[in-house]
Image (cartoon, rainbow, N blue to C red; front, side, top):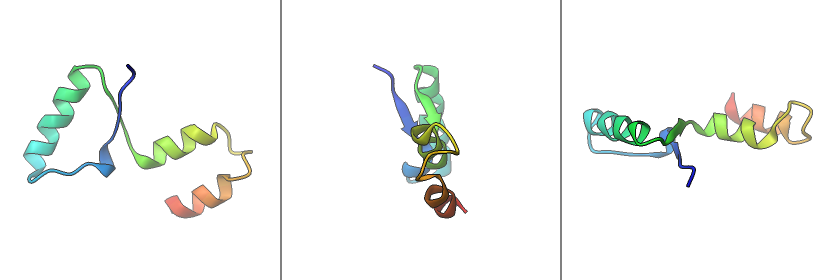
Length: 59
């Protein structure tokens, strides 16, 4: 499996616990990404018709 973890969509009781979990996930081979990264990756190019809408959401 290819595992991607959308870090800004994850929660934890404390920042320390969150960071420890991300370290373990990355160490096990998971890709740590953000929602913004996923959105732009799905579109693949700025020429995509949905690009302006996504850009407005990100800003």
